[in-house]
Image (cartoon, rainbow, N blue to C red; front, top):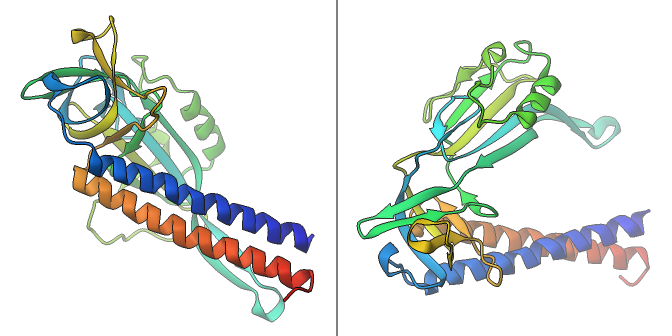
Length: 268
């Protein structure tokens, strides 16, 4: 069993390490491809900056904000134990228990023109917009609610009923005064609204269904498709941070797994 575990960790480490190369490639693409104006976009991989303009909108689940994209995360504070006997330790840790997102087509607009954006398959890089806290005893049927939110269709006129959750807004930059006990939950919401300024990198392709016959989408030959509410500099910084983490964590995990395996078979 120990042999299998050591090889498993080595394999996981290798996968995470090579993910770092994928992130490095995206980082180089963003740096190398010049910014284009929408009216002057050429077919193929492009980088544009523009504001969201949309006629159709959807509702985010918790704040009921009109948007073109939302993502949510539900985290629960759980007890984690490590060690055994006298060395056994227990700590509290936030664990993601549910996540989901929804997106619809929209338009990106700059001073030169407008382009349709099909966000299918896009990698969204957005900041948390709203956060809520829920005490352990405030709402017990979390499994039922998670099932409800996963099946919820935000295109309908009906709003998702979150009144029973008793959510307490968490204001950015303010010290939390909520209890921190096992079973407490946090609800995080990310979304993009009309008028938000975006950094986009994707493939400009011909489409008879889009105004101007051009749509920005995920390409067949070049899959890089990033939609970010950060600036280009902020997007590059976030990618660089993930890249360094992937190389460091992957490398350490791989080496540790290999060393343990070699020790088990008597080589070292």
